[in-house]
Image 1 (cartoon, rainbow, N blue to C red):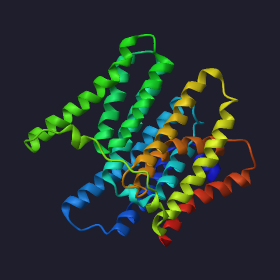
Image 2: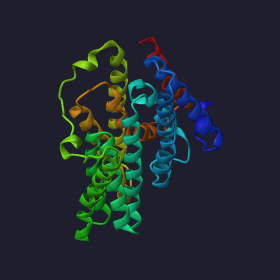
Image 3: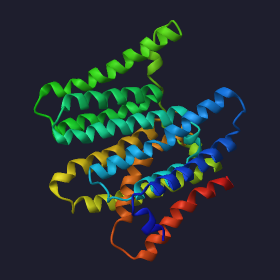
Image 4: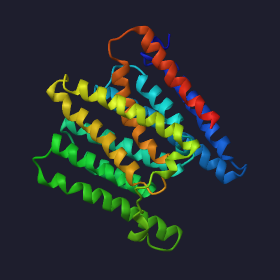
Length: 306
């Protein structure tokens, strides 16, 4: 049974999920029409690694911080929810930005250990800076860094300055790169992206399914998560608040995103996977749980009809 299989954390689970993700990654590029040239194929290969490997980081975030049980539901749901976003899977910059955001989240949650706090704050801020270089509006996730400081190490005033230093270093590295490769500086005006509050593109037939599925999942699982939040122990609530803010910031990025081709929806997949895992791990009928898992697994195949 699926629930029994994915409730465990064995190598075969990761292999099965990675193959599932690879299939939909290939379908996304097939629908886009990948040209048989060395550069596009190389970018697609790197993109596949940027898509599949972060599931390990997400799994570590979930299990090391007791957000979920010791199974693979989270990464399965991450795979299923992301598979309904083919535009995201073919966007190299979105995938790269998502990787850096997850690495930043790892460092933020490690602040609870109260060891090497300054290094972790710097690392998280630096990763957010790199994420914003790939996709500017991911700069909004810097809110998570400041919340991490507030919850875990707010007494030292110097900690509040470090995020600015981390982002500045990322910007400095970008300047060094462009100076070496293109013999020009990376202007601040090139860094800042435009914004738009228009959602007309979401009404297109090829995007409507993806938007509809993730909208329903977000409303439902966010509601369940808020209900369960009140029943959690006080010492775990700061981490749960970070997950909630993670989702809210991702929604904010979607709202201001200039292109709105559904690739920006990818940022809500990780926090949504954590929240939906909390629902799957609730104590209810086994048959219903099996049906839910099959719905999630088969749902991305509907995208082939669009």
